[in-house]
Amino acid sequence: MKTPGVIALTLLFATLFAVAPLVATATTTSKVPCFYFTENGKVIGPKTGVCNANANDIAVVFANTPTAKVACTIQFSVAGKLVKPISTCPTKANDVEVYWSATTAGPVINRCYWTLNGKPIAVCTVPKGATDFTFKAYKVTQVYWTVKGVKVGKAITPPTGTNDIEFQF
Image 1 (cartoon, rainbow, N blue to C red):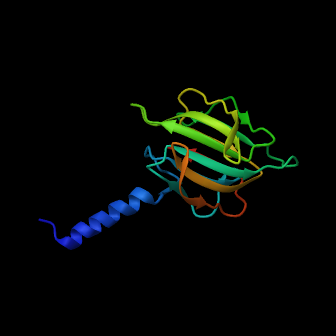
Image 2 (cartoon, rainbow, N blue to C red):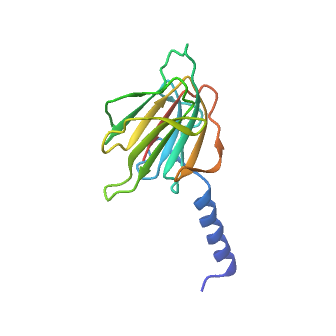
Image 3 (cartoon, helix red, strand yellow):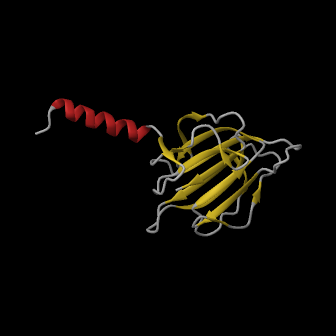
């Protein structure tokens, strides 16, 4: 029989990790969705990812300017390899939302929308079997984990200089 202290600790641990995002290193191989803040493709700040096993979509809020040297784009990967097409954001977009679902082979990205203040304005092309993505913009300002399109938890603010997001399972 478990003592009351062990039961309380077990419940606290389970509650914490059911709600709070997990942190993972850049070598995570699990099927838990994780993203990494990057600047020009290099991980910045702590070398950890932000993960959430309960989420089934993610929203990335960004600033895009017409004079930006880097076009606002999203490119998907299949089995770790970048594939075409690269989807360029519409001029008015200020966020991108990416959705995935579980399959017998593991999670697969199945939908993507360019949005303006959370309202879809265009569809991103998602290749069949996509499992990861690289998002680039002038500046990433916030990231939200979402479940069925509804934000869960607080906005995650990136380190200064973040202009990319690397996402993987």
